[in-house]
Length: 501
Ligand code: SF4
Image 1 (cartoon, rainbow, N blue to C red):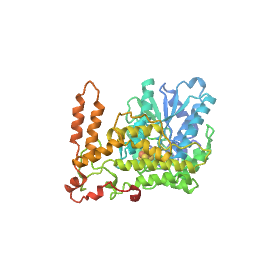
Image 2 (image 1 turned 120 degrees about the vertical axis):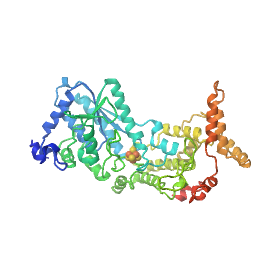
Image 3 (image 1 turned 180 degrees about the vertical axis):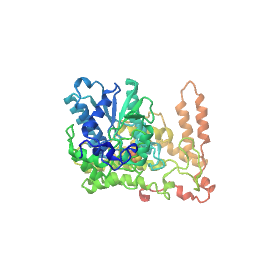
């Protein structure tokens, strides 16, 4: 690592255009100068810092640099907090989550020991925003490049909430990130766009009361590794373990705090369920390196990936939209019906598969290690509520599936929605089909009535009933008849998903 002070002019033939993207930062700055810049920024005001930590090389470098720079200040100068936040999507690759959790614990332990103002926190998505509540509860199809519904809900919103919370407490905050211009041309463009002339801070892309500090913005990737492998980690971890993790995982998922941050979809260190990439190289490499207990995770992820096959989509997906029950035709050159959310039958299959995966992974894992929850109880309860309320799931499938696979009962609230049961569903199916009425239509109407039963003001019931009637209740065959090139069999869900995928 060239840590000798260099001449900035020598880094580029044109000093106005800034350092060349391939030039090491250490050719024109040394660590002392970088520490000084961090110290001056910290001491310049009383705005607290929020450091985004993803567990990857760039955010580790940033945090480590700041740690050393801040440690050189006197205790009297350390009068404002530095929060370190890390998003746990609840579907993080297990090895990465262990690495992040142990790092955050160490940061808190060493900060206390050395009397430094660091405070590490994990931030989580709301239960209602979690990956499985959306995928299985609401039926959102596995994310892809064009419908990547997960990043906001799992990563950006939890970090934003933390930042906003600190803004309301302190007035303004400085968000510190390990972003580097050399990551990509787009990254560089976005960073330049938000920069503030004459300041080493830039504007936050969303919040007027937040500013961004990027101490390694001019570092190239070799600088990052040279630094990490030559400068000891100050909170008692070994950066060589991080390097080893990279060898297994290929690349990292950055701490995503806004939409300008590159998605983890292209660089893997992210969720084990991610279907934005074709293959999960990171998990494949970990399995090849001996972690074969992760195989069931990869199989579940690959199952999700296969549902994106355009030929098979109609088998898994509803014709009707979830909110308005409408049917939409493809535009933009395509022909036929736009597939919407996953069918309830397929979601039941996914839930069963997920629980089987959880059971299998835990059977294969080292028994001394902590039990790995792939889905939490609160998520299961939320999925149950959504199915009961939105899908007229009178069979109350979630507790049934859970009990089938796990062989135990969760602490379910009995009859929380005062709904009907599986026996009544069976009778209704029979009666409705005799009269040629869609059974789900009757179930939904009865559910609306039940939910308004006993209410003093029942005005909203008419809108609700109206909404149910406005949905498209034609049969699959009737709908596809109106669309050239559609085959009703393609949309039939009376199939064995096990055989199909
Ligand atoms: S890693 Fe994949 S699944 Fe996770 S938030 Fe990023 S894009 Fe979504």
